[in-house]
Image 1 (cartoon, rainbow, N blue to C red):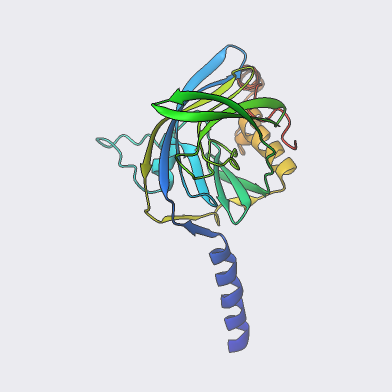
Image 2 (spheres, rainbow, N blue to C red):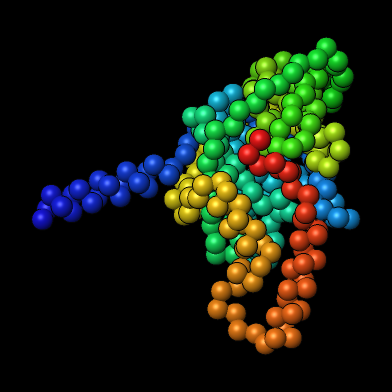
Amino acid sequence: MKKYYYLLFVLFSFYFNGQKINFIPSVRVNYDSSMKFGDKYQQVQKFVLVGNSQDYYFAAAQNYLNDTGQYKPNEGIDLRPLSDYFQERMIKKDEITYVFFKYGEDKIRYEEKVTTKWVLYRDTKLINGVKCQMAAINKYGRRWIAYFSKEYPQSLGPYKFSGLPGLIFELYDTRDDYHFTLTKVEKFTDEFNFSLSIFKNYPKDKYLKAKYNLENTLAAFPGLEIGAEESKYFLSLLEKRKKMFNNPLELKPFE
């Protein structure tokens, strides 16, 4: 019996420790962004990137504070439930990219191996006084233009975009629906630690379906008991939301 419990302990320890991610970054980067989520709905959003050339964490600014335990409610007002317009966060560790998402009490994630095939150009421009070189890639149903600097050798950038011989200072798609611009970069070596154990893991296709249902259907309100008229009203609000968010960054999620 003791051997049985010991085996269970080892298995559970392996499972939970396997969900923990840690790495030592070399830089912390701040980006401003403009994002056209859908019909007549555009927002600005600040992002934080911490990482080195192999591993990184990327999230909107409030979620970064939430995930790293830095957020302190101001005068008792907790802004964490309001959080950010862009809710997905991502961590890359050992060549695997983990994307995770919270919606109320639901916590879901998926993992994938992202490949990038950049084309480098001779075009250059100054961004925040730093000389940057142009690169381009076709990814997720969009053509993306990036400007990176070899003065910062970290192969990092916004969202899932990395693999260039330097830090990305600017990134945008040719429709200019999603536009990221670096505003600050600093040396940063505080160890990053995060556990994914509370997030249910799905294949990417099932994750996308679950995320859609949580955000756009009454499935987000299990146990909700409402009448026909109230249901009709809720559904009309959800239809409006679908139009507001019908232009995802990944138009082709499996490209």
